[in-house]
Length: 118
Image (cartoon, rainbow, N blue to C red; front, side, top):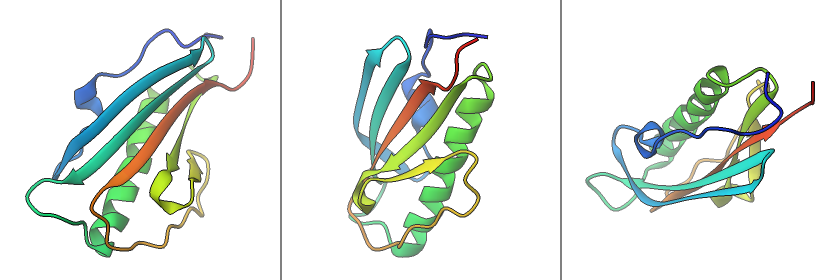
């Protein structure tokens, strides 16, 4: 197992069908934490409907879980939904809820971090 973040995922790994990326930033804040900020916009229209936001939020949470499954056990992923008061989803959180509303863009920050040392 690792005590440092030694790899990231590619830009294409963050893409979600029906969306475009309007912003993408990665910041390795320390050898134990990487923050990747992604802004998603609708592919062929101006806004996401509340239903689309709900679906997109689920896909983002699933993506975080998929990332975490590909990493060593002690490196975790969480997602901060910036448009929703910086609400944070952790992969072991079954009761996560957002109040979906119409949005032009959904802004999230994937945070990869070392949870414990071995």
